[in-house]
Image 1 (cartoon, one colour):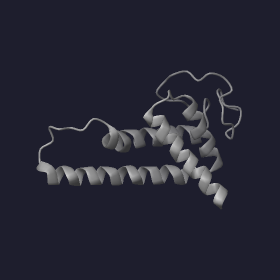
Image 2: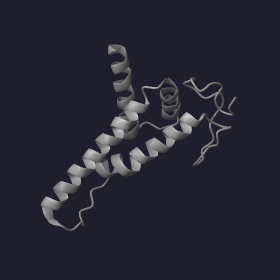
Image 3: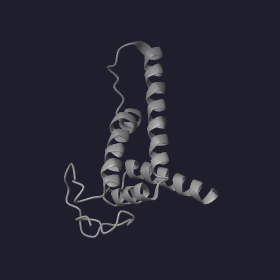
Amino acid sequence: MYKYVNDKFDCEYSQPLPTQDSYTEEELPIEEIEVREMVEAWYQSGYMRVFGANDESTSGGKMAQSLRTRQTEERLTKLETTLTHVLKHRSYQAAFQRLLTTLEPSPVKERLNYLLSKVKKQAIRH
């Protein structure tokens, strides 16, 4: 059905995935393409802004910096809420699990694994 996945509910790739920036719907299920875009947005506009290098050169003083930090943390929370909501759907969760297999051990992968485990725990309770 797809070049690298036998079924959209599979949690593993059928063959090694080449390293590239984007994939087509012939190569991967649309759910994985969307999950990859969501994770990239989560990383760029949420995670890196909270956990990345702090920009000490930002002007505006401590109060402005505190407001920016709070807004950035709120943005990360919203992005993670969106991700966990999407991961409740089986095909997106499988895509997310496949994506995780491509990541090297890192704090980013740990955070994404945490989000996945959070969704799985919620599913068990319901």
